[in-house]
Length: 264
Figure 1 (cartoon, rainbow, N blue to C red):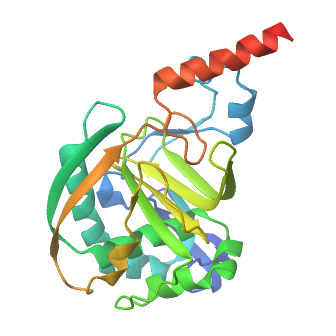
Figure 2 (cartoon, rainbow, N blue to C red):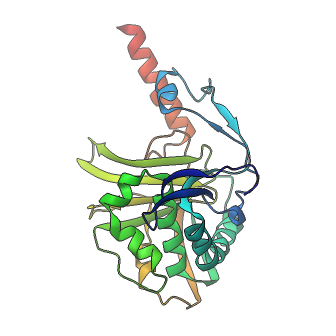
Figure 3 (cartoon, rainbow, N blue to C red):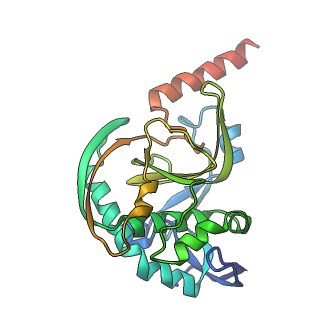
C-alpha cells in the first residue's frame, strides 16, 4: 500500500461499506506509479484571469493519481482480470503519440483484449465518481464485476481520443451544454496520456473528433485481436469536459473575454 492510507467508505464496485484501498487511475503499470502532479480546485481556475499564462496554485502530490474507491478484494480483482490488458492498450497508444495538436493517427495494435479494456475504463469512471454514481448507475458495476458478461445497456457509451494531456483531466459526472450545437450531454471524463475517455449517459449523438469504442463490449473475454484504429490526438489545456481547443484558440478566446471586461 506504500504511503497511501486506507479510508472508510462505500466500495464503488461491490457496494459494501468497508475500508477502501488506494486505486491508481489509471493503473500503476499504465505509467502512473510515480506521477508528480498539481491538484487545483475548479473554483481557482474560474478566478484566474488567464490560466494559460498564470497557472493557478495548487497542492503538489506524488505517488501516482488515484482514489480510495475500492475495497481490497475488488482492487485485487481489477488488477488480476483487466489491468494487464489495459497496460497493453496503453503501450500501443504511446507508440504513436506525437508532439502535434489535433493530429489524426491511423494505426494498428496487436494482441489486445477489447472487452477487458472497456471494463477497466469503466472501473476508472466508477473510481473517480462519488458513491451516488454507483447507486444511480448500478449496471456499470455489474458489467465490470462479471468478467465475461457483455451486457452493458445502450444508455452508456464510451468515447476515446489520443492525448498528451497537457493538463490531466478527472471530471466527475456533469451535465455539459453546447449552445452552438444545441447539445446537452451527461458525461464524465478522464484524460491521462496517451488516452482520454468520455463516458456518456442517455446520449445517442456523435462527439466531434472522438471515437465511440462502446463496441469493445462485443468481444469475447479472452479473445486477443488486432485493431486498426483511426483516432484524433486532442489537447486538454483546460479542466473542462469536452474542451479540446488548441492553445492558440484558447489564447484568442481568453483575450477576447479580458478585452470585453475592460470595455465594460
